[in-house]
Amino acid sequence: MSYFPDMGCESMVVAGPHIRPIGWLHPDHPYTKGEVSSEFLSRLKEFTERCGQSAEALYFGASGGIHTCEFCGQAYGVGNFGVPCDDLLFVAPEMVVHYIEKHDYRPPAEFVAAVLRCALPDSEEYQVLTEPFWHLHKLALERRCQ
Ligand SMILES: [Zn+2]
Image 1 (cartoon, helix red, strand yellow):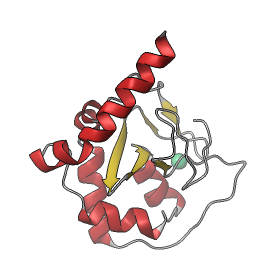
Image 2 (cartoon, rainbow, N blue to C red):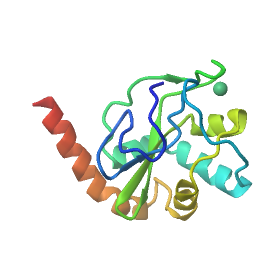
Image 3 (cartoon, protein in one colour):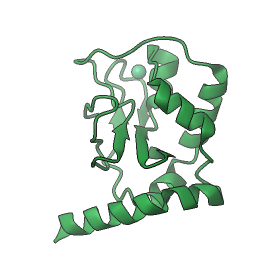
């Protein structure tokens, strides 16, 4: 999987000043380790279970292929999902759960707060929250294809 630093402006699927990538880890780069709450972890799993709906609501286009865990080679994921927070959008790979559970990764507090607060991707509220991003990403993708 490609590496993108947490809280930058770029991920494998989308980029821009509104994007905050989370959990695009790689063994060549150090990352923050530590405990996370079980409340956060179970809520996060509800997001990863709804990756498809999230990607659709956010007009992610192609997933960018399969991500393999480059720390252990024992896990892989294909999906990515977004967590809107006001005018910012956190974008994480499905693998983020594996990084937390197996590699002790601790995501930034802003992301933890957003996951606990945001409606799940199969809700109407999520559709409303993600609509501005849907338009942005559609435009960006169309520009890239021209
Ligand atoms: Zn691993």
